[in-house]
Image (tube, rainbow, N blue to C red; front, side, top):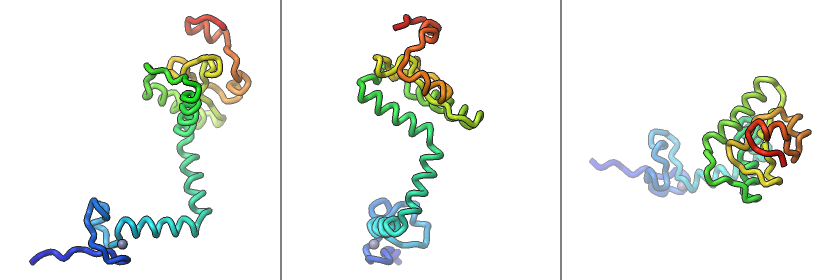
Length: 156
Ligand SMILES: [Zn+2]
């Protein structure tokens, strides 16, 4: 006996896992095709804008380091400062450190470009440091000579 094709309970299209039905849904009792599911989700989101915003707010709150990293990366690209020999994993580690310091000490830590992008600095792990937010804001686009000499460069 042939298995009967499952059909979408909304539009009655045949449900094909991986095509209009996600494979993981096969085990779920809710038989609804991907287009009907997307349409229903869009309708729900339009009807509940505050819930949607809440979800985005929670996501942003839980991914502060990623958002900060993405922001700085966009700035770096804009200024053609993306160093070609950068190590994205090491860069991500600096942002992760800033995020953990923020949680640990209950005050914001930023990722600072030691040599500011605006002064020709590169978006490269060797030019990044986790720094207290208030120090970073005070530093602005200055190049701190002692920090530069510490890393073996010359003060500008
Ligand atoms: Zn359908």
